Image (cartoon, rainbow, N blue to C red; front, side):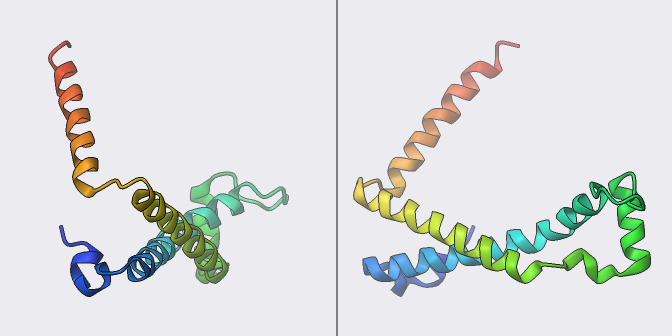
Length: 127
């Protein structure tokens, strides 16, 4: 698995560039999440409308949107990308800040995950 930080090794050198890398990664993740979830949210909003002509199910809403205006599936995408991009970038930045503040390394996180994996494998034999 290739990470963003391995693609840009020069950005790992200082705290400022590490924060910039976290912001960039979070922004990309937020925009991707917004783009993927927007059509489903449009269908849900359309199917839960209180209008008398509103479709009864998400499938009916999809068929109605595809018949009338397929671009409605991506209605409101830009504000959603801005919101989720900023929100998730902030979360990534806070994660990196507290990780550095408490001196947690990647090896520490891997060790904790290994302990959880060991505990889960212990319980697999009881069924």
